Length: 287
Length: 315
Image (cartoon, rainbow over all chains, first blue to last red; front, side, top):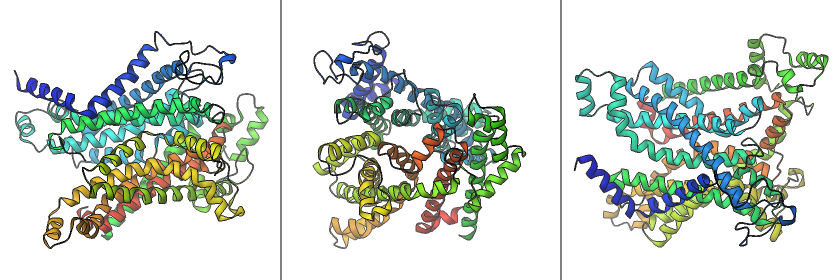
């Protein structure tokens, strides 16, 4: 067996022994499966208005109850998961695709004017919280799920750029990178062939955390009306609509909130667990 | 140190200028004709022309930018198109709700996080520690606006201890004002406290492994004495940094929470301005929020270099 195979077999065994990875992984997987299943099947159609069945508490016919239009909350949660996952996932993608190359480039030309410009640019973006970016975009282009993706995605860019730069900097002093430079490889090629694979684990952990932050941010934006618009179901909008009826039917407000909490909790546990797995120094040490 | 301060101050000034350019371009240049944008599609041409003149839109873009920036220093931010009052007045009135709310939440989260983090670190590996770690993991996952709704359900709807929203104004007395801000502040503070408690715990665990703690223990101090006399003070450095960096999340959280409780703060103002397409209000509120974030990060860096002088010298 090659060294890589041995290491990955060890990782798998360690992953199966880590409660954080197991619980977090199962929770995250459950939400993704629910979202995927909703593409072909939901217990009830989500556009079916049944005023007679409105505000029904959880029961055998409606597992999570119904809302003010008599719509099945379980079906709404399943379809809403799609929106949340799509927004958060694409936003993480934006952060990775734009942030990581910037960070790698900055590290490759450390101390140069390019490095300085990239890092100061990152500082500038950090001054705009995702909510403020969303406010700016919405003020001009109107609300929508795409705006939420752009706002959260822009916020993610400096996160990944800083992380990639920091992790890459320490690699540039290592022998195998020196050897590659002596062999005549250019900085760009070294960044892709030698640096990137070695910081991939760190990036995966951060992507999991940004994914969970993205779910929270998407819910917040949708709640204040800056995210996905009706008729697209989203957890944040469900909460906004439930707010005025909270005294009448508390379950309408409790259910979408629980969906958000379980998703974010699952992703955070998975992220923490993966970090401990990838960093052998942390194995068995709870921080 | 002076050179460091100067360099940071310069960097702060440049950040503010570039950020203001971004805000100006997005809100004033991208929409094409801001007057037509604000009035909507069905506006009569002479109404648009009148608003153009009122907003000074016939001047070149760079003059309008300089006029706006100059106005930020003199407090002349223009007149709101929907409220028909000076924007500076509008913002000043709303700050009396938003700033106390943020300060209240920050105080609460610090008061909760510090003891909890210290307790967890002191009893590392115990049931208390496990409870704190589990509780904070949950606290981080809870959206603050949903938590706010649960607080309303329990303390307003069921127990009737607090009102479900609204703000009586400070004229009704400091007690009534603080009472109206209590549930919103708790909703904002708990998720922040969860993060802060984890940072406090992990910073303490780091310092507890330092040589000077071992020396202190060797001198005969108990674990608790060493923790209080030496570790807590040193652990404060990373904690304060995180506290500063969390500020932008607190700000964003406050804007959302104000909407849950119908508080007349900056958050409500900016959302009302967005739906009314009142760009005059939006640009100044957004700029204020951005300046606040940049300023807090600047102050954190200065504070950091004061606590740890090596950071000031290295630059």
